[in-house]
Length: 209
Image 1 (cartoon, one colour):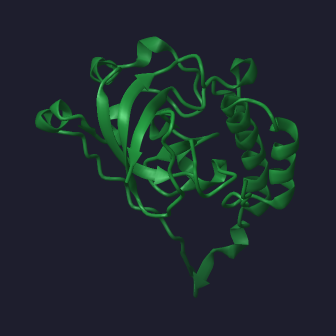
Image 2: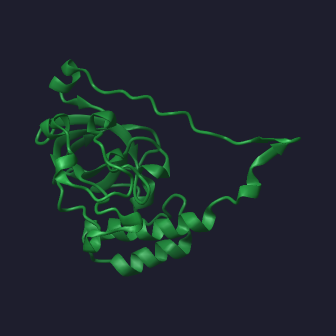
């Protein structure tokens, strides 16, 4: 198996994750990587002094708000969904309760869908023949783990006999959508920041293109 260093992670943190979670389930591996990622992000965070100053004015780069793009009824009927279709009212790092899910989100459970997003590289240890990965709404690390919105990621578990390779461009995953409120809990039911889950959505991936 070809090992690779996850994006924005230090070698020490990756080695800790490998040592602690070798032989464990995919759930345990993800949880371990989240914990080590939170450590590495604090190590590489840029200090306030790194902001560019010109004269007396400070120039700070800001991200543009993400445009909300919910699917039309016609698109939903065909199974074409977006991450905005998965949104529900929950604070970041909050404890998840089933009652928070909207009727529209619940309707997606069991549907065959197509969802476009990015493969999150920091949860991968190989670049080819991937059977399980995390799909996120954009290519920023903020979409998964501590401080991320719970609805901004979907766990992809490829069906038997199907795999995919890592790419940096957006991909479309097709397969059966499932709401799973048990499998992706943090160990002990509590994770960094107080969140109870690192994901509640998954797709049984039939194709990634």
